[in-house]
Length: 125
Length: 366
Image (cartoon, rainbow over all chains, first blue to last red; front, side, top):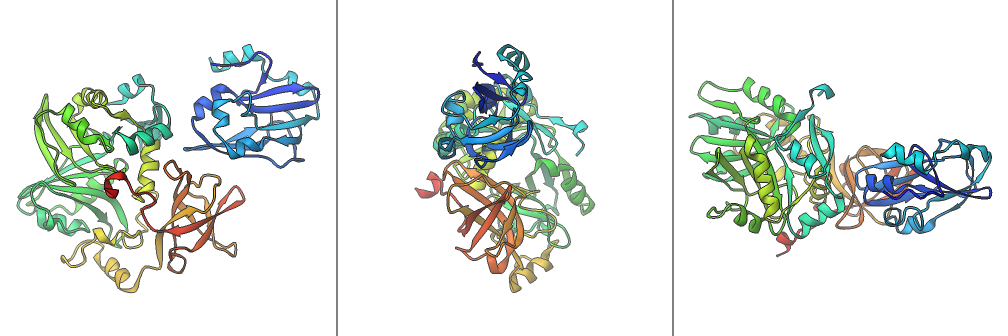
């Protein structure tokens, strides 16, 4: 299972890449494998303000719709329109082209509350 | 059914060994998928898949009064069946509502084999036993049989490999032949629209047969693919598209009802609906564009934004790459081409009423 060291993780299987005060969010390799064929991604509107734990996007497989929760609080500053057009990117490149949305952080300290790679590996192990 | 009474099929351990993801369905612990629903769906449309259907029920009906009695209990005309033939039919309540949909096979002059839905075994049996006359024997053999559905354009080849020297029955037919540990019953039917058969064998031999069909070219498939395949064909799922509050006429399944054969339970309502036209009809809806997959219970709206119904079934069709669904709508909105809107978390996706089925399998195209 691919769990990149440079990312932080939520127990609900979102990953966060922190660059300055911008957090890029996607779902983990483990999560995409559990969901299998992703057929639809519903993106949040840019400009939307979300609190940590808010359902912010929806990833749908053939069988079920799964909420993607905001791992940190912030404002949605960018969304990945490519996964809307090609949802399978979430399966094929979950940490790269399969990213879902970017948040401008409200409270950078919240990132510290997320799991690091070894913590997430232990969770899914 | 309470979760505490969840049941296991004779194939449960094999599913786990094959890496299936297991889920509770209709009171049974069943495989929803092994690899992916898309792969399994494609295997059945393009080659062959195999599904565990051991959870389904088998009833034996026999005795001098069996034919006459079944014709009072079931909506289709059992008298049309010759020895070795089967037909799709319904067990109805007094109001014409569907208790269960099933297949009845004639295996002798006065002998019948019924295959009923897993969730309805107890209810069907109790309903039938309540109406059972003295000259008819009714037996529930559901626990004795393992069952598997082998489906797809290559299914006949898989049968030939796994059962050398045996012949598949014709479409809707049934054959019985001895195998190790008892008999096998093979029915040329299925729930996918593809050529295929349902294979029943003694419960303790189920694992070996399932593995034998896999070795003969069938890919193990779960309930996820079973649902996408059957919905592409507009085959109803009891409990979703059929219910005690809906009749086969409303469901658009009048072809499987014989109003001319004489009286049967539920006939009066059906005859009236047939004559007057049903107030509501089960329609097939196809998204006009890409959109969030439709799912059962999502609200359905008319062009003015009034909620007129909810989806009875819905899925993203792997074959069409589009949302497909069924719903009961007022007759006035059931015409082909009518535009309706599926409400997915507040977003409205346009869908048109289309002709059933959504998909024509290779077997039907040939």
